[in-house]
Length: 324
Image (cartoon, rainbow, N blue to C red; front, top):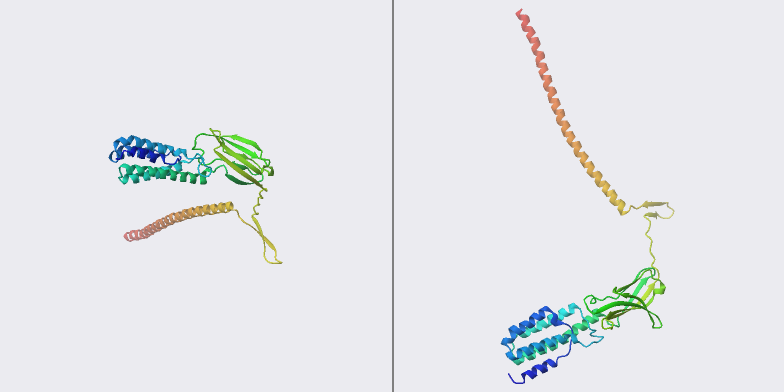
């Protein structure tokens, strides 16, 4: 190892551009840095440089939160999804370096060049977030509301609830002479005006304050009040139809869906009771048929016994007469 290695290490760390975000707060990143220090460095870098390298890497990642404030790229806040995306990008590149098994000065060069690229990548992530989600001070919304309906102006953005250091929402009515009137102030991110009229049309401004006295979000609303919405009446269920010229008119009462359902229920009930009655009739018929058959059999058996007894009486009387 050449004697100017420590100077090279400091120079490489110093040439990194400032960036932003607390990537080092991510638990996965913290574990990866500990693994780099405990597992990778002992076999890939002289032990006397371990402490200095670890400190430089941590400082560099800490400086991710020092991105320059620019209205078109970074306004000081990002959301959790952007931090997660940047953290995984960092972890992927760090794993690529450790998997290559590079050592010594070449390892240090690749490590800090990777950090430089990750800062640029994070700046890109932050710019994408701000473009699509953050809504900088030039943000403007056009709102259309019908007369006699409620006007709702929503000043909340998706990162507000997860951010710290924010204070109150303030809504102002902006007049044509560039003066403003405070309409409401508090924790509620929405302004609601019930039953608006033409006099409520115009410009409004919402401002979310921060603890450092500078606004975190400013949104302008241009409100247009449209004429009262016409409510169309539903047609009557009675339909009058004329069949040709010179013919008489006839009307048909169309049943409502509710009446149709009631009719279906009644028909189903009648069908059920009819089926039950039919089963009872069939059962009674079978029972009656068996009773009639048994009665007929019993009657026929009784008639047969009586005839036999009637025949035996004359025969006995004839026998007695012959004996005498």
